[in-house]
Image 1 (cartoon, helix red, strand yellow):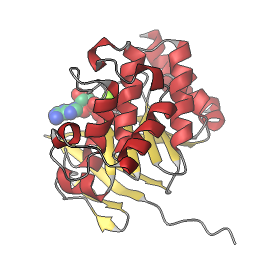
Image 2 (cartoon, rainbow, N blue to C red):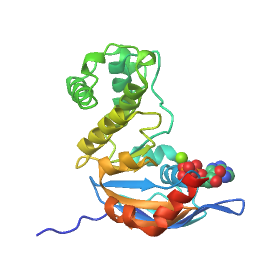
Image 3 (spheres, rainbow, N blue to C red):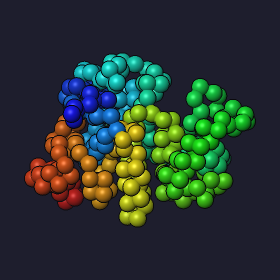
Amino acid sequence: MNAIPAPILMMENVTVDFDGFKAVNDVSLSLSPGELRILIGPNGAGKSTICDTIIGRVRATSGRITFKDHNITNLAEQEIVRLGICRKFQTPGVLPTLTVMQNLLVAARKNRAWWRALTTSVPADELASAEEILEKIGLTDRREIIAADLAHGEKQWLEIGMVVATDADLLLLDEPTAGMGPQDTQRTADLILSLLGRHAVLVIDHDMSFVEALNGYTTVLHQGQVLKEGTVAEVRADAQVAAVYLGRAKE
Ligand SMILES: Nc1ncnc2c1ncn2[C@@H]1O[C@H](COP(=O)(O)OP(=O)(O)O)[C@@H](O)[C@H]1O
Ligand SMILES: [Mg+2]
């Protein structure tokens, strides 16, 4: 029997009102465990605000967010993180003075203080999983490099690796290809696809080549509202979506 699994994340009629301006307007969206969801839309559409709201950094004015059967709508960010959601921000947040490997170990530490992750001996299973992530993000040869010395794309991959190292069930990736060329963009898409199954991933972007490489179920946001949902092909073929994107291209 192929029962559809219960969603891991459910946003129901979420509105975020900033002093009368609805950055997010009655958005509903749900994600199954291990599934990919792509969220696209022009600048200012409300994509990052949706991420902020899921992780508890911004409060929903109305609506409800459920994660693994917990009502997280009004929980604090640390509590939401503890339940298993991890977010990568638009700008890379690696620890610049630590090596690639140290960054992964610090991200993976469970309840230990971050410096303990570096000063005490690392349990064998944590080392093994850090090695596995290094391989996945393609930085095995760069493990002893100080993060500040990485190329832009490598920093982004390391940060995705750090998010993976937390072992969260839901990863929120906000514009992971910002500033990347076509080759690095393709590699990022492959990396994200390799995470599915173990992790549900909500990825935000506005680069259509990246979205096409991911080729997952896509939600198009426009002025805080869901404009269209469907496969990448369906979204691409939609006249309203084209108008929103082409309209901006003309500006
Ligand atoms: N804290 C805030 N207060 C007021 N307006 C905000 C705040 N955060 C975002 N906005 C506005 O909400 C809209 C959506 O922003 P954002 O979610 O960052 O869009 P996107 O990530 O899709 O580019 C924008 O018009 C932005 O200026
Ligand atoms: Mg944004």
